Structures are given as C-alpha cells and as structure tokens.
Image 1 (cartoon, helix red, strand yellow):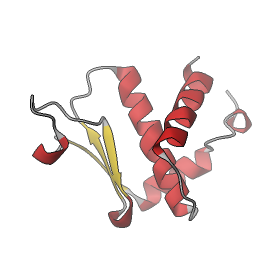
Image 2 (cartoon, rainbow, N blue to C red):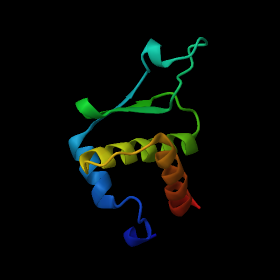
Image 3 (spheres, rainbow, N blue to C red):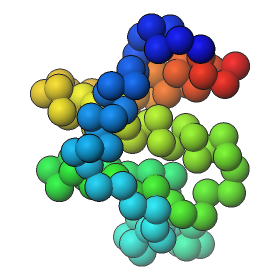
Image 4 (cartoon, rainbow, N blue to C red):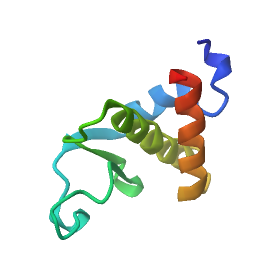
Length: 102
C-alpha cells in the first residue's frame, strides 16, 4: 500500500506523533478499570503531557493495532491544533484499519 492511499493518516504524521509523544505499554491505573478490574479503554492519550498509554494486556492483535491508530489520530489532531471527537476518531480508525489490513 502506498502512503498516498492513506489520506487520513500519513507516515509523516505517525513519525511526528512518536517523536513528540511518550508511548507507554502499561497496566492501566485503577481509576481507568471497571469493577472487575478490566481496563475501560485499550488506549488513552493525555494530550497536555504528550503521553500515550496502551494497555499492555490487550489480547487481540486487531484491537492493539486499532488502539495505536486511535491514539495516534488524537495526538495528530492535537499537534495540528485541531479539535477532534471520539466519534470522529473511532470512524477514522476503522477506515484506516480497513485500508491497511483489508
């Protein structure tokens, strides 16, 4: 797949995000887990601190890939000074995933 085919997320934007943000594969803090101690999210971005957390125990590779795309999109928009919504990012995550992996 050529970079130009990924019109929602370019390789340059991914590199920019990982050059600016600290990515951590970690256990999620207790306040981000439900009453069964299961993380509420696969990923979380704290924009002001330029931190991306990915739950280190996501069992499915598809979910891990989607979590990376999702958090990179939030970070990309932040670096561009643009507002995003969770709904928008979820939609774009699915589109990008389908373009990359089919």
